Length: 269
Length: 333
Image (cartoon, rainbow over all chains, first blue to last red; front, side):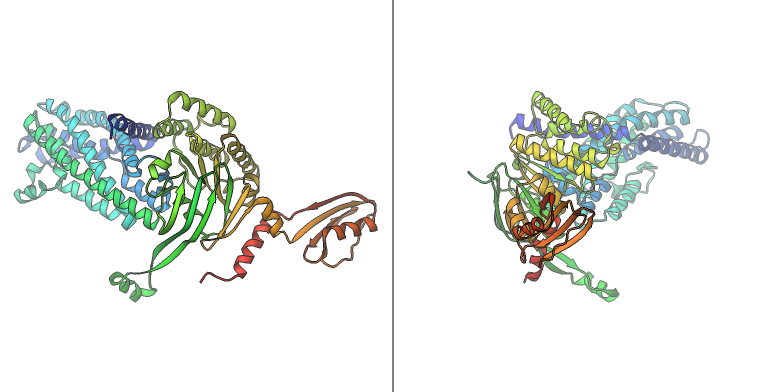
């Protein structure tokens, strides 16, 4: 593919992503609801940590304030991801998938671009919300707030990995129709193995070791632990893991999308 | 002249899973899955010349939408050859996509939360239109389809008729050489249907665009098309011009006559009097029994005629007659 051709193709998906962001912006109630949910979660866990740890209490390297910011980052990464699997499943159930395949773009690629646009918009809204609410509950920034800057690009990549994963779950609808059970398993594994609420440092050794074989720590714990301090080495490690897992997820998605395309061509939408 | 669309002995089958009734059947189905083969399109052949406007009619399950999906490259035929604008749709779907437009009446290609204008802008990027050319085309279509006052409203706030006009504009932006329309007037009221038909006919003439239209509504056929393909059980039942269809399948005609006399009585075999008013009489003629000339002669001989008209029956009756003749031929083996 020539550079010009590639640029034109990339431009199509960028335009779809832009429209996805605009669509998400028009759904203000949904975005506001997520922001409110994030604030409530942070408030509740802020109180829980205050009660459990007491004044000046610490768990490993993290105090109450760091744990609140850890949760703010992990929830930011996860809540920014739209339910793409439901969107694809809906198209498969209704037959809309066939009508969307008459355009000169990939159906899955267009869905992915649309969801990434929505994710970007949500990250822009939920990021400041998470930071401000965490700052208010903790009564200030973490001891070394420079790590939070590193959490920004890592969170962006982490959410991209999550979107790729939910896209793959959605494409499985071409075979199993109801994708919710797979999504629930993925989501619960992300909560537990990714360390959504508790950093992996608090896990037993065997569970932490097992979790590191999955993509979930890179997706949540990796960006979240940036709240504990400025750690460029750890950030690079998470970055590398996100790139590897992201590539694998993208390859899986491409493979599934091709098989789904063949399935539609032979068996109908 | 080469055909815009050519199908040769096309067949499409689907394997549909079958479930046995009852708990035992469900458990058995977990171990041994059963499926039966459905023939959606069977040995279908036809060709459409560039610029033709063709109606593709058939009852539910006849294979119309499946054929349309094969022609637009969504489905791969199980057997046979398909050429659309010289391309093989199943293998060259994306190349073909730049040259065709598709409208599914029951599906929307517009982003419902955003104005249709935003979707048009996106489609311009997707179809790689030059900005100046796109703006000119969009403005021309927006004026032609009279959607200037709705194009900036979120699509979900539009009426069905307004939305369908926006759908048609979206499908025509990239100047498609062929327009596939799957029930474009479904759910619309009488006025909106008439508007859509006029716009389609006019646009087909102006752009020289080939139109293949599926519909249950024979008004779409009469209002837009010049040729009719009728499909039943996946097989082509009839391929005729609209005039040919009227002539070949019209077994009855209606005569309305206004006379100076309050009532007119005709005592001819094959003539049935329809509910009529004073000074006006309506008759239905069975053309297999009596000719129009004989009936008109009898009317003129029996009364002083002020006005007289001879009409074909509605298109619905014509198509019903075609389906009935197909059904009487028996189910497909």
